[in-house]
Amino acid sequence: MKGEAYGEAVRPSPRSVMRLVAALASGGVLCLAFPTFDIWVAAPLSLALLAWTLTGRGARAGFGLGLAAGLAFFVPTLSWSGIYVGALPWLALSGLQALFFGLLGGVYGWLSTHGRHSGIRPLAFALSWVVAEGLRARLPYGGFPWVKLAFGQADSPFGRLVALGGPAFVAFVIALSGGLLALAVTRLGQLRSADRAAQPSDRMPLGGVRRVVVPVAVALALAFVGLAVPMPTNGPLAQFLGVQGNVPRPGLEFNAERRAVLDNHVAATLEANEAVRAGRAPVPDLVIWPENASDIDPLRNEDAKSLILETVDALKRPLIVGGLLEEPPGEVSNVSLLFEPGTGLTDEYVKRHPVPFAEYIPNRSFWRLFSKEVDLVSHDFVAGPSVGLFTVTGTSGQQIRAGLAICFEVAYDDIMRDAVEAGANVLVVQTNNATFGYTAESPQQLAISRLRAMEFGRSVVHVSTVGQSALITPDGTAHQVTSLFTQAVVRGALPLRSSMTLATRLGAAPEWLAAAGLLVLVGVTLVTSRGERRMTRRTRARG
Image 1: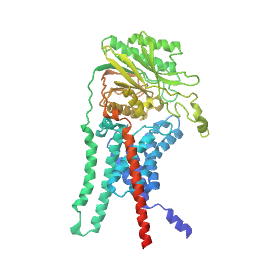
Image 2 (image 1 turned 135 degrees about the vertical axis):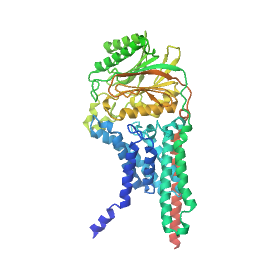
Image 3 (image 1 turned 90 degrees about the horizontal axis):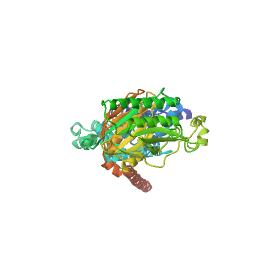
Image 4 (image 1 turned 30 degrees about the horizontal axis):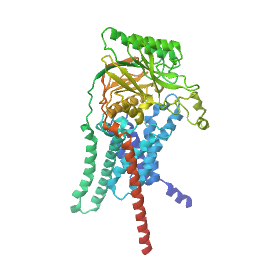
């Protein structure tokens, strides 16, 4: 009997199973909002399903459902992270990121259970989402903001809102829209239940219908209000040439033939320069090579240095080279180097945010207890101290102030914003996608650069060793998108802009406001729920 009773107690109810399936479905649908699916409307629909699933579930069940949704989203979306290193890093990263969905579920599940007014739930859900995403972008070891909600919205009306409040504001509006749709579904279910229980003459009261229609109407309005946000693309033009030299082979051994990678970029650049000399292409004001174009230290290897200087002399134009330096002793620096004709190396930027477990191993002795594979990273990359900004003079005398980001740095709000605040009138993203093969990682990264262009009102030169590379105008439009693992160049005129968007001026304020708003909601809910419990105890005592 005890066993039967125990079995009955732990058997999941059909409603619990339905909620779990809905949570998993919400994560799966959210995948469709990102490259290579690019169905932007999937984001608010996914979040509507997630908000409906979490509503009234409480903290514990909410955490579990949020975690399930996170796993259903991150495991497929980040599958590129295990393409050459195996399932363990991929699943560990996905599981860690899913925990922040669990946090979202726990907080919102609790708020929606104890909150007195259902109309506040969409706001609670939106604030919970922004705070969870903000924490994910910062923790641990500097965070991992890849596939933020906004990063799949470059082609949507939602995406245009990034110029007003950055990725956090875009996420807030999408989550608020999803919360409103979830509220409408909940109210519709309540209305149908009341309708079945009512007399025929009392069915479908107008007020009840309005309570369903209004949140849907507001959600639709939020979905398209971004169309009113201007995306100016005017400004003095400068000519850019981005070189995608390609590598001998994809995978972790992409630079096993480091000289071949350097030679590829030299050859592709000189070939592009022949078109300039023949008058078939405009003279570039600035030439950009991608990350890892010269993994032979050009400051310590005379052959590499000579090749680069000869290329600069042939171009007669400044060249930004992505490379590795064997410094400081025992460590490595991932750098952008500016070479100019007649003077050689004139400026240097060291990547400020090396990738943990890829470019350096934090707490190495601790993580070695779990896997000796950490020692595959034999030399830690150091973090640079300064914002990346190279200044050169164009052929027409215009000043080009190129704000720099190396690879994953494009996903970090503060690094990109720092460059713009330092005076950048164009952004340069140098990346190497060879270690991720023919996966969605490269399109996902290009989508981030597109949103950054819209956020800061800046053109972006996005150059990869193997693709995808593109020239991006300040409205987020990507031009001349290259194919993966081909040798190619992107060349053309892009506007230089110096005006600051509202998002740039606000900085991280939208995230801090969301955190403050959520704290207020939690505090008010705690006070009111305690008051209700006291009243209940007093009523029982009197009875």
